Image (cartoon, rainbow, N blue to C red; front, side, top):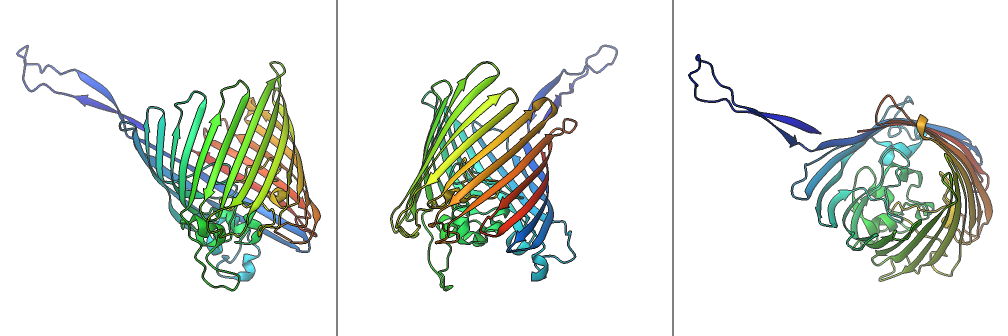
Length: 450
């Protein structure tokens, strides 16, 4: 948001020319007052369970964030943003008042126990000089294994320091350290259970809801054992090193190393190579790999996991389609070969909208999807189908193997008449999320970005 400041200087002396006052020239200067930014989000979700559970739950909430960023002062800027969510109360009793009514609510739009809340989610300093950028404070992160996972009302946010540099041609180098996290509203789906560990949410995520920033070790592993006794799982946080290279035409490769002190070391590799067939058509080949090993005090026990995936994408004008496949191994470790992702990172090619079983041990998964992007009309439509052959070593229902599937669609419309406004409708239809558990889910989302 910039304002024009008009400076005028009136002469203090009178020029004797008929007694008229001679005006001084008007000088216009541009003053930068910084900018206001944010997003207003209204979200409706409806899920109907079928099978071993028969229930309908739905929720409607509004919220988002609003922030202010200062003008640039010799490369230094600062920003602060407040986040919040408010239940619009489509049921007679609020969920925190009646446990029975809570079963009618989808919890993924609210805070701990279904509460409304607001907090300062971003508060950082950013300094840019030459080809180096340093950012420190509360912020949003979008990295492969630690990220916002902005799938419901409010995202995950972090307290961290991130340094990036582009001195090497076609290469971005990144180094950072993450101290604490507050878990977004999506975390309520997992409620701190074992399923969350392979789906982006740790055993201690309940402690980090409602805008509470909690130590990264506690978010991952919680502060209580199975008997409810206090356990000190606080760590020094998570250090991150990364390199992204785009120096060969059509090729992008990236490597990330996450050092979760006294828990595990996670390596993430990803590569894309795009081949132009002609002006209208191209093919993209992609591969990704995750390896995790325990380190230090091994607070999560012994860890030894691997995940590998490949994807092929075809593009023709506004239409594209892809097919992806992934597989995990197994091990005798305490995590049994399950890939642990407790800090919101979810980069897998084969994940569904809600089914994230691709990180279970002994599991093969595949996914196909088609995308039609009508840019001239502001419309993007996606349809997909994913299948998961879940192995016996899975962390969700141990010693049980089954096949889970999920189909769904996603349509986004950018409203041309209102800049920044987009409307989105999404649906997913998991079958045998675990054996006998199915549901149909629909979402309607209105986002206004400014």
